[in-house]
Image 1 (cartoon, rainbow, N blue to C red):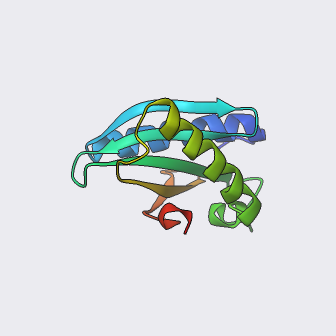
Image 2: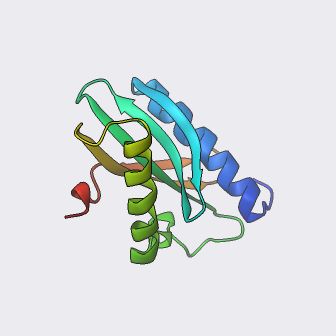
Image 3: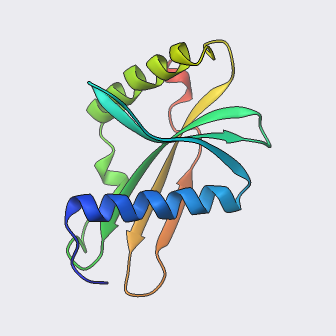
Length: 127
């Protein structure tokens, strides 16, 4: 794996996450839902649980970030921004009263296959 800048690494990670979720039979509804205060990487629908799933993707390139876990990049401040964007999305598409969850997909880019970890329901409705 060559050295990638942060944007390249993020784009590759989001594509890997999108393919990963599609293989697990999730329906991708939206990619990069943006508001002035933040962005949701992926919005999907879990056919098994019938939930809207907001997915935060964190990716590190092991060539340049060997001592960092992608999970460590999700901070409490980032979660608060995600909350605001999620609530905005739910209002826009009129899903406020439908079940939803926030997932994290952590990806480590390596010279061979990427390492993917999927954490479901990481912050249950921000209670």
